Length: 187
Image (cartoon, rainbow, N blue to C red; front, side):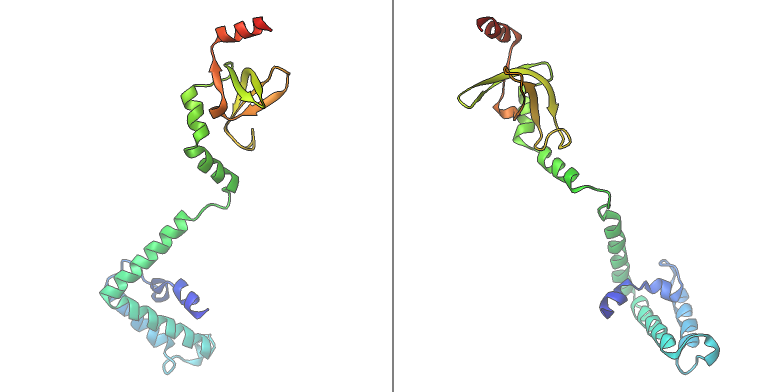
């Protein structure tokens, strides 16, 4: 527990100096704080209990130990930078897990590639082999999000029996308009 509390302490704030302050300013701030907080120097009128003054005195000492040495100060500055970047990169609470899954699923999926390669659009006539027969119809829409269909992308059309169906683009064949009319005439 103490380790976590110490990591969250900003040594620059403890000494009330800017992160880019020169060593002389840091030293002066340290000396002022030590004179105010040292157990032998602090008076009873300081307005804090003794244990509070002792804790604050220890934080001042720790800050000075880190900031007085150029190497430890540089390491500490890198730690602060890493913490700041981590806060910036934190995922927003408003990001929905479903949105992330869609991106992952749609990013490089076989079905998305098939949709692009076969150049299927609303109004196209498509067919597929399905349960020993053929399912075909005119594409009404293409579902690309989970709001439209639970497993996008899907090509949605009404089949020959009047039922709306959704199929993976990879299973479909795009037919020319002439093929559609020949088959309709055969029926």
